[in-house]
Length: 201
Image (tube, one colour):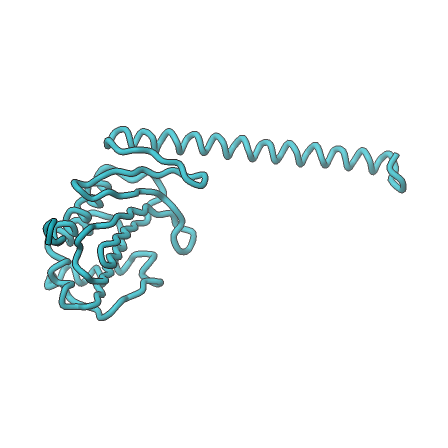
């Protein structure tokens, strides 16, 4: 017997230790089941779209290409506990500009960087729902052309940051992204890539 402990105290400690072990085991089992479920969902998405599944830090993502632009697509936490879909890419020979475009209702609107000056795209309906900031501002109108605006409007409350060819596109969504959302996101990349300088320039 452990010194100073009654048989009843020892029994209670043993019961508590067994209960803690059971609860931890149950949590681990539930986590593994959720992980397996997520793996199956993301694997199905990657296979359906002709992309590749990657596993990173206990989460899943896919990598693929939109024409010549490689991208990484994943899901993670946004502000205020929301979940969102993240698309990251790099467009070679992109114009030297920092531009941020986001839906005024985006959960990221409160923490947006707002580089340079706020600019208008010339599309009044778009400008009423989206904020556009750029540095230098004179390049924003050309980059925010009709194809880019239409693609952004195909996403729920999106946020777009482009910094000298590095692209981050985020939209709030707590489920697997739909094909319509994925098509719109890839259209954003293609619209931006259309402004890249031709190879060899």
